[in-house]
Length: 287
Image (tube, rainbow, N blue to C red; front, side, top):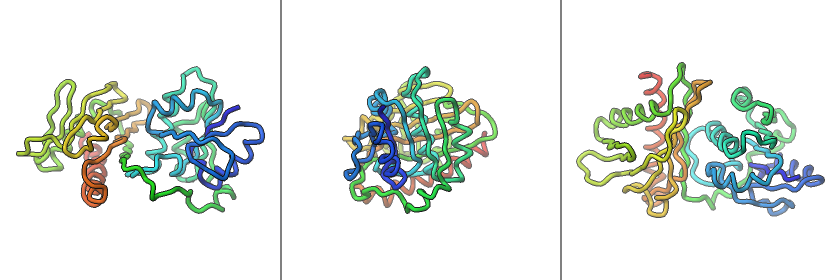
């Protein structure tokens, strides 16, 4: 049988590979040269890559560490990123699929949250935070010097009442105007969504509406002064809400900035982080 492990580049992952190899063929999203596993480059934030990789697998193991995520610039809470990634995995699997997913959670404080969201007949959340294997590891190892110059940013919000994705987009638009004291202008049509600076003729970021439903709203980045020419086809701003838990997440995926990388890290990145962190307070207060 074929088993795919996300986040195997840690001591726990190494031990799993050694045990599973006796009876299974093991695939990973990490290139672990010293172990006899098959490396398949798979980005958990790219659903088409997940679909291509997982359709042949019988079992899926997801270890909640950084190695499960893309080797890129990650902004926001790791918990939100893992929830987003696991939702992507479940989304690409057929509803009638008999594939089993095991989530090995290495952070005790998130154990109940993962169980409340994902525990089901085909998804098993296993608390590994007290394991001797985990205690023996430091952090998972990965090559930080070879990061891709892509940005993945997530803001997780837990509200007291239900909100749909379209309402969340409207609140995001209003928030940008208010937090910038009117300097940010939003031009929105039936298909387009542009972020502009007051008195400036060229849009900072241009987006097009790719998908809309009560629980999911996707804006595809198509250009703008703050977007790299290389990344115009990949970037997405996505709004997800849950009808059962009053939970919502805003995710910026595959964004490639136009600014030189170091300049971006010192300027646009902290500004974006501050804006997104204040958004939670705004939504909580006004909704």
